Length: 208
Ligand code: GAR
Image 1 (tube, rainbow, N blue to C red):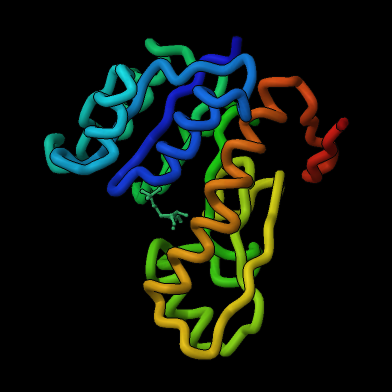
Image 2: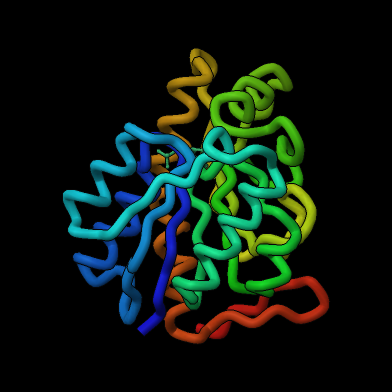
């Protein structure tokens, strides 16, 4: 049984997709044991509560500086000892010490086809604003392993989504979530839970 910790910041629709997939059998052999949010009062925490999953708020605002927050995040995760840490719309940079403590065991969902529209400053709606400003015809989502860079780790799964001429950042965000994010994030967790994923020379291999 893969023990999963999910880190969130807001709406938690990706968290919900994972909860639903575990319930419906789309993900086998995995259990979310802890949800951590950096924001209090967000819908993601309600979603965890409704599913009977333990949750907690860990906010940089509650610590004197970022180093203290990073130490608290590391300590919490070490104590929880998950097999996999899932960043599901977690908009706080993961400190290098956490990456080092969980090598190859942290994944992130990003709302574009990496390497487009990713890296520092590209998160949430900003990603879709940039895609529309560039006039791309296809965008999508990526699940990747987290390394010490921003959105630079090995790519696990990607799914393309069409951009429509009359799209706003909001309509595009919604389509990318529905058609790509909520599909590939549960799929990635299932593949990891099945032991089907290896990383060689920075590239992911999937055994079907
Ligand atoms: C999602 O679109 C996710 O891909 C994005 O934040 C949103 C969170 O939505 N993540 C990033 O931009 C990370 N760079 P959710 O809280 O409803 O899952």
